[in-house]
Image (cartoon, helix red, strand yellow):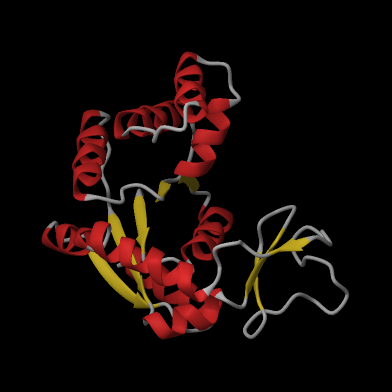
Length: 214
């Protein structure tokens, strides 16, 4: 099963993707991770990525599609979670064409819906483990009292520089302009569903599982 988790910044997509990776043997294809990995790989595609990033230019959709193709061809998995791609209708078309060409399908698109004001409260309280990326929240999931990450035991935690209200509202506007049209796009395709992203992590996990297994 190949899926997309949709939702604005801070909706909890990363947390739920990690759960799907652990519990369903899926592979999370993160655009950012793939670009960093390619840049350091020394492959022909990696050299192209490194050159583009070194010049300060934006990586093209064609390059990202090429990286996704490589992952689909070389990675054994029970399914893929597309993370950070597609962000636009053009990218959605390109991903659909790639999957069709490779004899695969996009099976489900699950949107995590969270109201803006709740996102502001969540994001401004967010921190992550510097070693494994596990996400914590001052209110809903505070860093353990012993100062150690529950996942890896790391003791270094950090907050993103743009995890503040002004930056978040700018990122939300970009999401609504660029990415929210994908909701209608995939609804029309008959594969879109929505869950409430405001509950407890296990509640959201169960809601997503229900959508994927239906």
